[in-house]
Length: 236
Image (cartoon, rainbow, N blue to C red):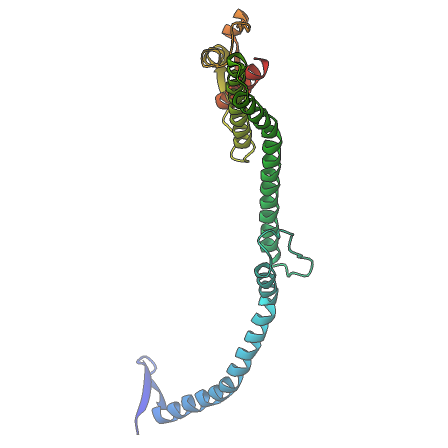
């Protein structure tokens, strides 16, 4: 029968100490220990798995309820999700979704307001265009027809200006990153606006104050140009 022996020799005292252990006995002890641990583990593992499954199911229930609620909503339903009974782990996700819904609702409301405003502002010039076109078609007088056509051209210019202003307003209110301010000289912007102005007849005189030649403003050049062009066009 195999043994494992460990020996310590003390030559001074003339002593040899030998400790022996039967390998068969050690193997039986290890085997019995494994059997003693394996049987409870086989019984506990399914129970532990069941408890973990139940715990995960309970923990994920708020997420499933939230997913079902969002899935059942219509495309235009952006009401905030009720997070009063949500666990602490889910509340950050709920708050983030509610914040996203609020941003979407703000953007949609702004879009509706811009659409309504544009429809209201364009209704009058379009009606005027139709009236002048009907006058030009119905009259036999060349002078009246010519006057109606000139008013049509003028109305088209005004409508074009209005559409451009509405597009600029929409771009500024789109909620993008704020423009970067810079030191902008005002005189070149005024020169650009007056040089590119259309529809200014001989009865209208536009003069730039010489004091503005040395004026600089800390602002976004694009936004400042839009504001000054709008001011100039409204004045004309």
